[in-house]
Length: 295
Image (tube, rainbow, N blue to C red; front, top):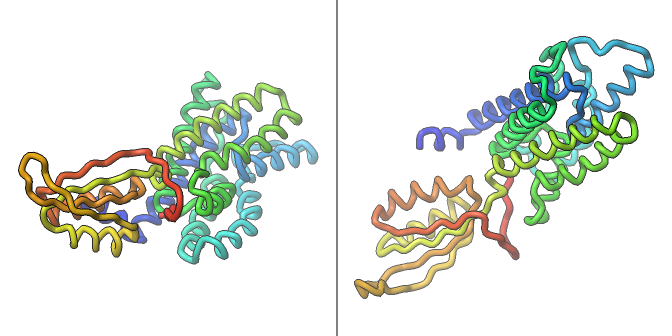
């Protein structure tokens, strides 16, 4: 519980998000770039531009990658979109993470040879590390810019659209260009990496996982309703019931939350009515007036 409470502090959340950018940058520079593969999203576009510029001017790639600088420049219009549509706090956090991510991508040296000889294993490890880093950023209410900003923008308006799904669609463009410009093997393994990454993003980003909670309480219903509405900013439906065995009156509460919020509700139930019985059903599909939160 102390860790969960500390995660609600803005400074801690931002620090965890920056750690996520570092993890994602390590996955890119240590696994993907040495195998001459390409990330998805805006970063993939920047890597393609880097490769084309190096070929055009007959330059050597060296140990450091200037794709990170290109990534920062291309994020300027996207950050403006984030500022206007996703709020000042999200803009501030994303700006910090974008600058941090670009810095990590620029200063982390590229190994002269792939760390893992087998390409499939490298794609798996890179996808897991990168997806975990991106998911951590999103869970902390931040992202490193790029297509994640667009994904967050559209997922907020369409609850059925997850960030991972949007990235997979955007990546079709990136890897279509890879297929045209390079050997098909490069595009195929890049797609494999991107698939692993987006799957991990959707699991790590807990706001994408909805849970239904049924609470059966004999006392404290009013306090729980107040907590759900005022603290979690979620709707709740209540009705009177009766225990079939005891024939005692109970209050039944029903609400839908993101998986990230369920820990706070568990703690509130324990404090308000330790004897309450509750059921949590994960992965429910919701429609109508249900707010999909960014953090």
